[in-house]
Image 1: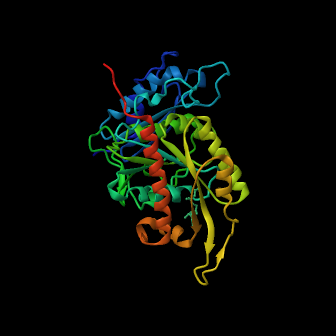
Image 2: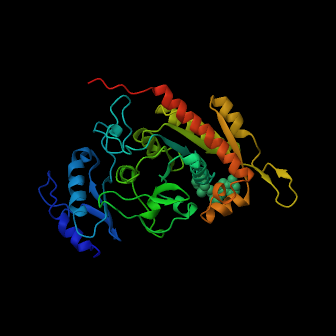
Length: 373
Ligand code: ADP
């Protein structure tokens, strides 16, 4: 298929008129960050923050126009604002949702997905992605249909950990097909942008990309999707926990106090938006020397269990620091797949079963949905 050029895209966008200023968005210099690669097009429309909500139709029109060009498989258009909105202004897209108001998720983002579980951490580098991947793979046993959504827009690591190269296709020309390996489906920004291209996006763009990875991907019927959340507890994470209809969240921490302080923030963030916290996982819990078998508690041990007790949350289990866990996920065959009969796979499976029981309990508590016509 012929590759679409930047000129063709810009020519098309000249038909999109800013309703307030009466000129097209190209001549007004509103189009920025245009990327077109292998039929995947992405760009931003720069607007004043306070105009953001009113310009959603403009964003959609631009997306539709570009999507209609020959050779375009996906079009991701986001509104982005340089300046924060005035305090009294309506919330920009991506702003925290007022409690009690209907969520945008009213139009389900992933209609065939029965449960979405977030794997989060208060800070980066604690092994959140490694844990998310191994748990997804452990959940996929006994015929469960599982997906993993890499919401770490700025540092997507799931494609490498699942050993999936390449880019997604679109079978129906409308939605992207998720990528798949080791029996789990997966979508990640890592498939859509170059590894060398640093992704420097502002909050609303991140939300929009994330929503597209849910709405515009043919996830199909799945029992559970594990979301590898971005690290930290900033606004993006908070917004996301509100916009994604989460069945629950698990928090990964290393045992030392400093990491636990961040884990506590993570837990409080989910509680603030009424997302059930299924519990804490202690990663890099202890180290067993491969030579002499001696156990060393590098970051001390048991901190997450104690913290969970203090916070009234469940402790889901501990995973040791082991070079095999790093090597296997670096090589695209996480330890649950590579050494399914080993103790680490067993540890992940046990945690996965606890998570599954929590999902089941949540679904049962909601009860059957009765529709009165
Ligand atoms: P995060 O998602 O929290 O930033 P990652 O999952 O990317 O963290 O892990 C950071 C690094 O630590 C990776 O190189 C990963 O392979 C390694 N790692 C994670 N958990 C373990 C573990 N239990 N034992 C050994 N290495 C680990």
